[in-house]
View 1 (cartoon, rainbow, N blue to C red):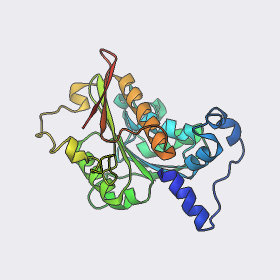
View 2 (view 1 turned 60 degrees about the vertical axis):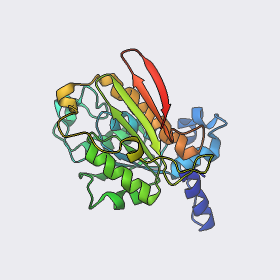
View 3 (view 1 turned 90 degrees about the vertical axis):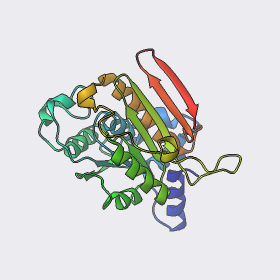
View 4 (view 1 turned 180 degrees about the vertical axis):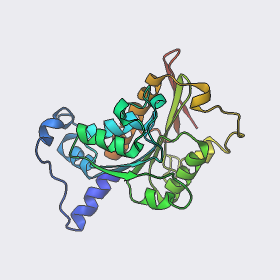
Length: 263
C-alpha cells in the first residue's frame, strides 16, 4: 500500500474528514485527473500526502516546485542556508530579489505563488542526529536533495529505522543518480531490499570528492534530476509503476544516456 493511500485509509478508519478539492483544484489538476493511474482517488492521496524535501538547492528547487504543482498537500522544506547569487544558475525556486533571504522562506513563497492549496512547513535548520528522526517521522515520504554524504547517511538510517520511503538523488558535473530506498520491504524471493549502505558501504575519504563549488555543475542537469526525483516521489505515493527500489538510475547528460542498474 502506498504511503498516501495508507494515510487516507487511516483517516477513513478514524472517522477524520478526508481531503476535499476546493476552489480551482479540479481545473488545476485536470490533466492528472484524466489519467487512469491517478483519477480522483489518486489526486486525493496526493492531497493527503506529506513529503519532506531535504535541501532547497539544485535538486530541491525543481523537486519542490513539481511536487507542489502535482498537488502534494504538505511539503516540508529543510535548509539552513541563505540565497546567494551563485545559486541562481540552477536553484530555480529562488530569484534575484531573494538574495540574502533564508532559502526556506524563498522556497515557501515560490510554492505559494505556484499553488496556494499546498501547505509549506519551513525547517530552517541543518539536519543532524538530534533532529533527524523527529523530522522524518512527521512525513510520509522523504526526498533527499542534500549535497553531503554525512546528511545522506543520517537520512537513510533514519528513514530505514522509521520505515519511510527515501527517494535519494545526487548530482555530478554533467551527471546524476537516483534511487528509492525501502529496506524493510522484501524482493520477490523473500530477501530484504537493499539499504543505502549496501549501495555505498562507506563514505569517500574527505577531500576525494570535490563539491559543487570546486567541480562545477551544469544547471540544467540539476533541473533534470530534480524533476525525475519528483516523478519518483509521486509514483511512490500513488503506488504506480515500478519504483527504483534496488535499482540505481544513472544519467549522463554529456552523452544523453540513461542507464538503470540493479544493486
